[in-house]
Length: 133
Image (cartoon, rainbow, N blue to C red; front, side, top):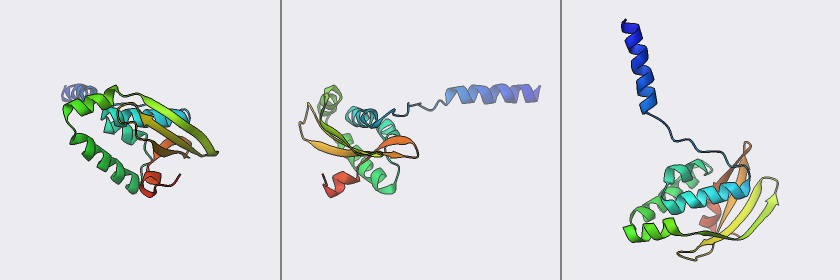
């Protein structure tokens, strides 16, 4: 009886604690779009999923999140409503793609690298830090 109750309790608790699931990017353009959209929407858990997980990238994303968190509700809404406008997406080699874009709210041009690591396409923000094209 105790064992049955324990098993049922474990199943119930597992059902209550559901991790959000995100789909791996199929290609570089998909990874770039998903990362950018999550950032504009303020969904930094999703953005982190599509980010190369090294310490520099995590620090840069945390800085983006802090900036986003300090915005007014109106500004956040404008970012969420903004569209992503790709300007130039080009393959540098079989595992690196440059993704240059702007969003329709701020219209500032940004370039990020999308890299393939262990078979998965993810965003690499370090290029922003060094401002390399």
